[in-house]
Image 1 (cartoon, rainbow, N blue to C red):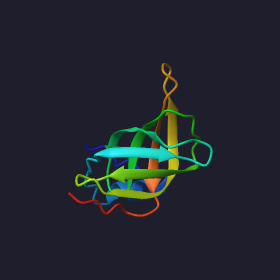
Image 2 (image 1 turned 180 degrees about the horizontal axis):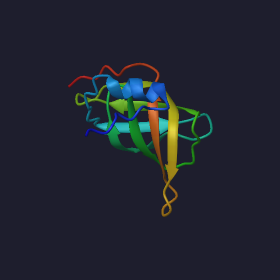
Image 3 (image 1 turned 60 degrees about the horizontal axis):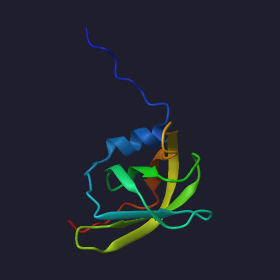
Image 4 (image 1 turned 90 degrees about the horizontal axis):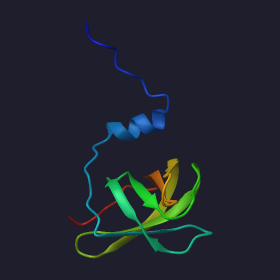
Length: 109
């Protein structure tokens, strides 16, 4: 017998995951918010609709941050991103967060 398919409580997240999730490999990522200066951040995973980022400052779900991503030819694409979830690391004070971009990224390959 097969197990039933789990339904997502958050339809927005389920819709995002159902889209074509072509991964992107950014050359460099910088982020900032209204209270935090521009800082380089690490991307755990990124696609055209969102990313999992490791931020050096505290952020809460629902906040908006600015994300600037450099593609392979060095052009930066800057846009707003909504923080969907966060997880604070025990050591180091960094925060892993999932962000959803306001618009689909159009990066050069």
